[in-house]
Length: 180
Image (cartoon, rainbow, N blue to C red; front, side):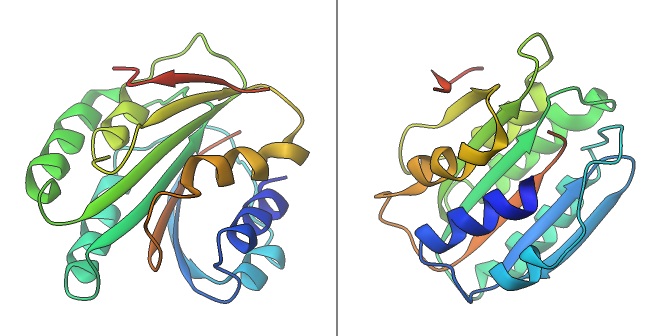
């Protein structure tokens, strides 16, 4: 259950009462500004399809607002990778990269839950933003109860703290460095 794994990871990373930006993309795109306790009490869950393309517009707005407040970000994308609107994702990801590659220090990481036989273009477009440490596309096929440990490992000791953007799609991990 994502609503348990993510708060556990947030606590371990020191985000107990800090708000995080959460963009969900499934059959619709939704944006939330939540604390760990808000997330624990939410009823967020996977609802089917994965339409990621429009989440880039929300991410762009968050980056613009964040530009005034901080110089570093953590970005996590979790999805099953079965993205239904692949067509515009590369262009939108390339545009974000060009516009923000020198603005922030970014640790962006991806966790693909379930099948490994799917397109990674959408996830890789977010990994491209990483300029802090190795970016990883983690294939996670285990029980979700240990997902928080995987999330913490991706962000712990990256030298960043303060703001985090979390992008979530649908549902020992194999790490793939620079999967594109």
